[in-house]
Image (cartoon, rainbow, N blue to C red; front, side, top):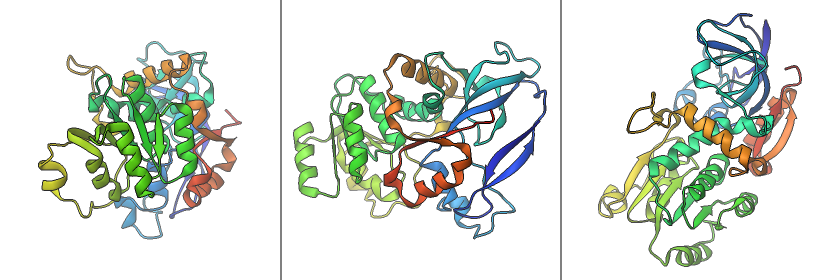
Length: 340
């Protein structure tokens, strides 16, 4: 069968390409018709705008290495490859698929979508586990204080997961007022503007008695945010680098900001999930994906509030342009695939 997929041959440009997919997927794979995909406002935009390390050095012509975006998909199984157990055509599925009308994915990494979960909210089946993995790596205890720097999709999800893990209070930090308002709406105890130094100091004193936060999640991916994150942490606290940082960290004093204060810096990326469940950690990416969908189903993870746009997939180029140029005008953008 044929499918269509978004592709970039140059920075900040998107086109459509036609791809051929097998009617019968290879062993261990699923052929899936896409119902909806979610745009990642972090990694995908960083790549499309050319600020990642591998794209930055490629110049304006990417035809030798085109960029194919997308990893947050919900669809319907069309066909099942040999050796695949537990799947049948017609089942709704969540997986790490690209922005395409149909995909072939590894069955072992896909999870069935509960009936109670809509297509739009099920698209959070990839970003949810990314944030949850970071919260798990922080090893939160009931009543610990948490700050989340950067209230994009990953930051909002990290705050929600932190509260579900017993953190109190959970405080957000972001320059964009709309994001701060949204954080308060979905359950953050407070959110403040880091650009207002006086107000920021008052908020910190109010929520931590001037001691700093037990755990800080740096969710912007901007290199300038890491040092402030380290300084928000209490002595012997933890800082989780959850956003995919682009570029070198400047004005970082290893001794004063980290070593002397005993702060633990934790790297958390999608690939830091365990590859296989084991006695020490059974929370693989598919396991966290299944939990994300269950929490959405019962209302513990109100991701519907994070969706600002639901548009036909044909508008993908325009929506990526909107996000690249006016990040404050959109949050979660769901692309709906009418031909699926």
